[in-house]
Image: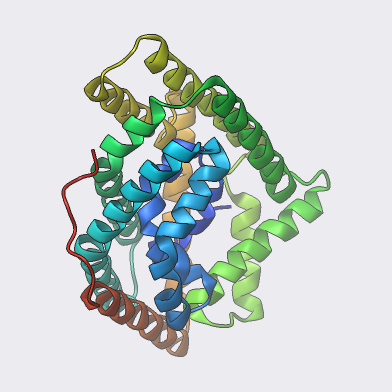
Length: 317
């Protein structure tokens, strides 16, 4: 089960692993939030400045850049990073600060889903800023690079099977419970046996169907490859490529299959309901820990945003 926790941003890193390349481009400069999963505030301060290098490596793993593409990609990533650091980190810090004030009390599923939506909206903003460079590079990919991308998709799909589709139902449940507990303990510190039992029940009842998710994921990966091939075949202009990739990113974020979209919405609602139910059963000590953790992250983001740096330029073109 994938659970949007009261600090909805905690789920982003795990979600990234299940998304195709274009969706990862959408959130590549939300690496500050991904860094939260690495263990705390000091790690965030260390990791975020490495975001341009991490972003380049992640994308290069998918497309295997040529020398010329490498130069352009690193330049574009640097521009987007400077913009993200100056304009987006304060927004995320504000979201964390508001969540900090709210987690000391009970929360509703609507609040949690609202946090998820706010984070997604900021990801969309980042993708829109980076879109001109993404489109430019997409138009330069050759057949060998698209084959490389297919191979990378195959590898991540195999990883998905290993992580979520263990043949033994007990092992599958055990792995899912461990993932959920690990994420919860990032925010709330150690949970007790009764709370762990609640996680087990929630995971067992989750509408998440990994076989169905994988089939839809593979279909959307093929849409990615087909879209890039069509853009190149039609000798698309940069504006046409941007429009097509914007549609593609939306399809990757939300399945073009109506039945699957309903499944995604149902899983989101379920996660928000569980997140609220779990949070509302936490102890005052756990809520205090959560508030302090969120404050630490918010303080770190503001520190990072205020550090001396080159001013951000216009969107990379």
